[in-house]
Image (cartoon, rainbow, N blue to C red):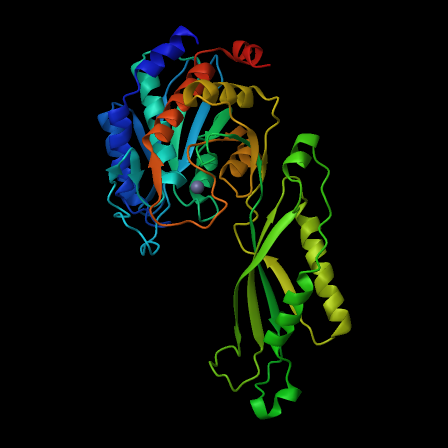
Length: 416
Ligand SMILES: [Zn+2]
């Protein structure tokens, strides 16, 4: 390890990391109500001596930015995490206080400590260690804590608009400290069926066109959709062995518009669909494949009147960074030393705000953070261990040091 890296690691203080995590574990930060969480971070950053910037995205919903300035000879690095994550009514079954920040047997309990309060605390404390080590930085290091992750990346969209961007980015979402090089896109859609403008009564239902019935036909038919596989690099192909697109019908509503009656033949039905295509799947092609199913149903039943549209704000983009990229290699080395275990290169079946940074700001983006990536439903008694937290803090600190204390040429050469 280089001297600079040793020096930065010595500046990480476990008590400080734990206290910050416990403090933010106590804050409920639902999407749309992130202000209190933002204030806590601003307070922490200021007390640590950071210059902070508050960028209001919409009223009472600010992004929080903290920067360490470099000489511009090196690559700039952005740490990004979302401020939102919280439930007004916690999941049933908690034996601890969901917003108590309790520390018990080396575990800090709290809703959303895994996704991603712990990651945010670790990124902030890593940056603080870099600051305290007082090194000559060649590249800027920025921490951006953003609102509206669950609102199609609203806060990160603003970062791009305000040019709070960088050459490289690390998104601290939970990957169990594996390096995520690709993830899926996220597309919300609305499928609508229409009946007739005339209100037919149950007793004359045979004269009407039941929009809910037509929807159920379509839903059944949709199960037969054939997703064409996109052409992608071999390492991406390997990471998505099946399921080109995951999809789910999450909501259905219907009836006769303006008349809440079970005795009237419904003239509309709306189904909310969520589709998660793998990296590289062409969105228009995907839409075409779904529309093909609709066309087939229409051809066997001319009374089917249906449209399929994106919900505004979608698609949220997928992500891919080649494993040969210096950012990926530097991340892996940082995790190996900082967390004590060599990471795997993985994919994520969810979506991060990194897709926006990659597509809109042309940044090189990688995703890695503490705690398990959850393939099971979120449960009660969520916790992060102090060990996970410290492993992440050290790894982020090492990555920031490796990147920001070298000029571009030296960094590329070290990780080519
Ligand atoms: Zn998350």
